[in-house]
Image 1 (cartoon, helix red, strand yellow):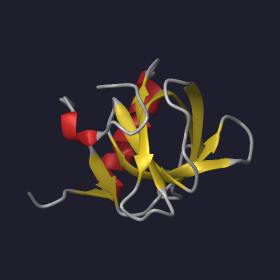
Image 2 (cartoon, helix red, strand yellow; image 1 turned 30 degrees about the vertical axis):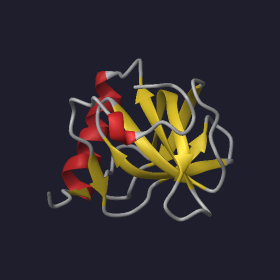
Image 3 (tube, rainbow, N blue to C red; image 1 turned 90 degrees about the horizontal axis):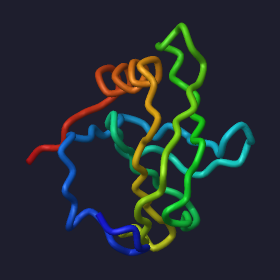
Image 4 (cartoon, rainbow, N blue to C red; image 1 turned 90 degrees about the vertical axis):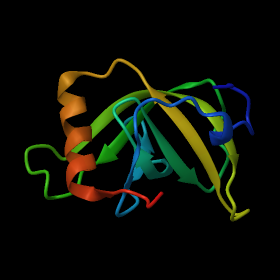
Length: 125
């Protein structure tokens, strides 16, 4: 994957299937209240956000997301991730950004798996 803005999914060498969530979970920057974007798809190795503004590429982020009420033992998780690419969406009012997750703990991986199993769907091929 190229780390330059504008490069994207066409040359993607992803080995882990990402799953689209049935709703867009809001993602905040670290512990602040600034919304970075909404999750479009997620896997244990990465995620894609849609946002109103472009996200700087090759920067590390603490991505905080509130979990759905159905996941009863935790309200939110923080994911360490690096932005790998960013480009304008098909709708020119939005941008999409790919993030690579790093320092994934077993605890956080468990919640990502819950999100994937309980709140995702597969796109028809």
